[in-house]
Structure formats: C-alpha cells, structure tokens
Amino acid sequence: MTVIRTEEALEALYGQPADPSLVKVAPVVTKEYRALIEASPFAVLATCGPEGIDCSPRGDRPGFVRIHDDRTLMLPDRRGNNRIDSLRNIVRDPRASLLFLIPGSGTTVRVNGKAHLTADAELLESFAVDGKPPRSVLILEVDEIYFQCARAIVRSHLWDPGMQVDPKTLPTPGRILAAQSDDTVGGDSYDKEWPDRARKSLW
Image 1 (cartoon, helix red, strand yellow):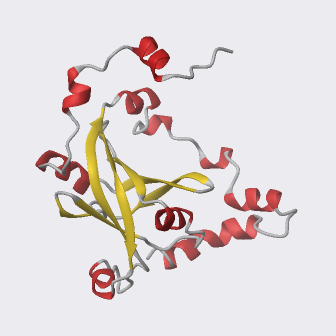
Image 2: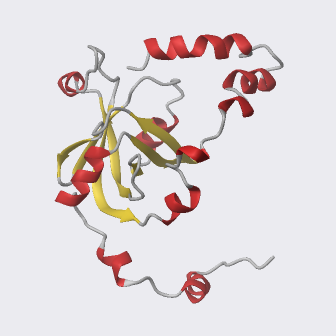
C-alpha cells in the first residue's frame, strides 16, 4: 500500500482547489450563512482532547444553535447520557467544529473555531424548553465558516425516503448493550422502555 505522507504529495495528487472553494470561506456569520444555520435542526460537534478526537450529534428545533453575533454561536447542551465526552474535551482543548445539516437541502455548513462552556444561570434560562434549561451552553467563537457542496448528500441519497433503512433490519441499542455486557445491561426490555423514557427526558 502506498501511503501519502506529505502535503506536497497530497497536493500533487489532487491539484489546486477552484476559486469557489476558496471564496466561500468567511471569518464571520454572513446573512446567507445565518439563514442556513437558523434552518438547521441538526449539527455534528467535533472536538479534540488528550485521548483523541470526538464527534457527537446535536439536534433540536430548527435554529437551536443561537447566533449571538456574527462571531459567536451558542449551543445549549440538552439531556443526554452524561458521558460529556465533547464537553470534557472543550475544557481541555478549545478547538471545535460544527457541521450543520438541513433536511431536504444538499447544502451543509461547516464552522471552525474555539469553544468554552458556561453555566451562567440567566443564559441557561434563556434556552429553557418546557421549563427545563440546559445544564451548560457551549460558546463557539467563529474562526471561519463555509458551505460544503452537495455531492456527499446527492451520492448518499440522504433525504430520499425510498432509501430509508428498515430499523427492524438493524441491531437495536438494547441488543448492542446486551452483547457488550453479557446480558447484564440492555436487552429487549431496554428497547421497549426507551421511547417512553426518551419522550419524558428530551429536555
């Protein structure tokens, strides 16, 4: 196997990016990028720490990532599994990225910057849903923002209803837990109880 080990070798293989790939990058949240972020109900948060990198899904109602100003995004940390892998990384290494997806659109938005966490009571309360505030808010200082072309979405048929996978053909979380724990955790009861448990703890 040939391993590419230098930037020079990589650039020789791919050539130079076209002008649109460079012009699209902005140092602030422009009017156009604001519209895309506000339409998105789902983002992927990437962080890094001493143990390595982490990539975590984040989702809520469209516009759940608040645009505080053209250099600052705010992401409430909703209920989860309390592993706080991403948050642990951020308190040790501020580098973070967000990838926004918009159902039905091939355009995605990538934001790179530096993050920190806050538990300011007034700010938490401003993000409350059904009277339930998040436990913390991630503040992302934008270094750069740009859109990604739709090729990946088009190739994957991500929004094509005909390409949806029947969940019954996949391992369930309960079965995965059971396999990982010699049947001491998870199982069919976990899967049966999860929808009601999730419905009561979304926020």
